[in-house]
Image 1 (cartoon, one colour):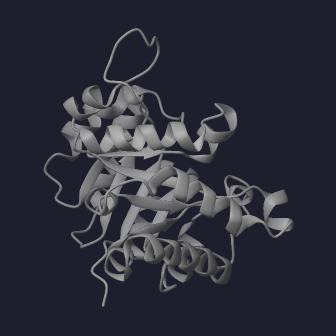
Image 2 (tube, rainbow, N blue to C red; image 1 turned 90 degrees about the horizontal axis):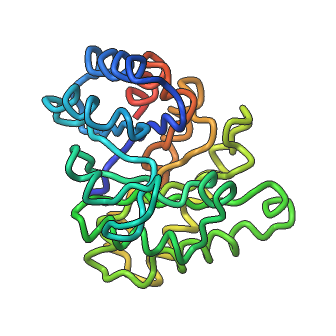
Image 3 (cartoon, helix red, strand yellow; image 1 turned 180 degrees about the vertical axis):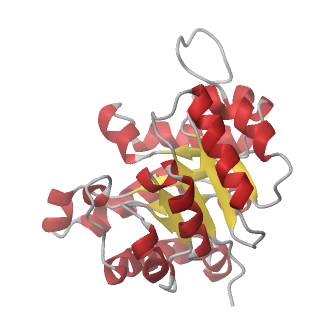
Length: 252
């Protein structure tokens, strides 16, 4: 039996002003039930310090940044370092999200550098991978995702890799209202786990949490999470509503 964690991570993206973010965090804290599911709030930078204080007494609720820079510090106007993130209470960093890969042209090599920097500063990467619709339709989705995972993660030591959370996100299902079927999600999660078996062995593969990200909602979460290789979700739009986010956590 695996001992991997069940995780539901909310990615607020570029939403919520300062007061709105504090209100959302308080609403989640007020009704979050004690459980073994790890819940994570991935907020914009302006919210990190405030949300860290709001959730500090909640055992199963953690804080994530949505990105970081790969360098220690210096003349990188507009960027944020892992040391800065850790200093305001971040435990996780979302890296390689499809929007970062697409809009900001982040390469596998750059994401790999960010993963290593995050680990070096004692935070845990949530590493995103996934394919766009034309790649899926061409039948090349496994090839692309394998390249993302191998180039992004597979030069890590076994000890470092064991700290990584993977989020598979079919890009064609993000924000579109379309969701991969539970069978499609399971197929890709099992494929990713098979890659980990080949590189790091069965024990580490069985302990690696792989999340599904792509229009997770209260109505489909339970069926998605019931798949044997789906260990939770990376939740976008539904994480901006406390009741929806809490319902998805309860679906674990």
